[in-house]
Length: 84
Image (cartoon, rainbow, N blue to C red; front, side, top):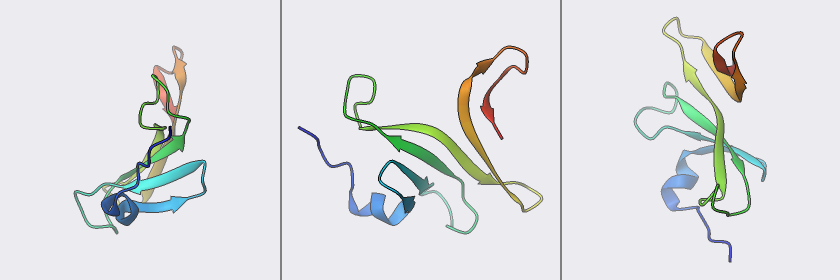
């Protein structure tokens, strides 16, 4: 049985939702300046008990521009697990 993960606050914080991915802003700040996360929906399972997984995010840099990243498998050569 699939359970709904949407609450009134979730909907307020959700910026975009295409049914497969959604972007949710952080509740600890103003919408115009706070960071947020990119989630991918999955069937509820032991590895995704909430039915979603964080796959990236975005934030406003100190110079004022916005940056985003996507999680990727760890790369020893670059010592990174995300792509900007």
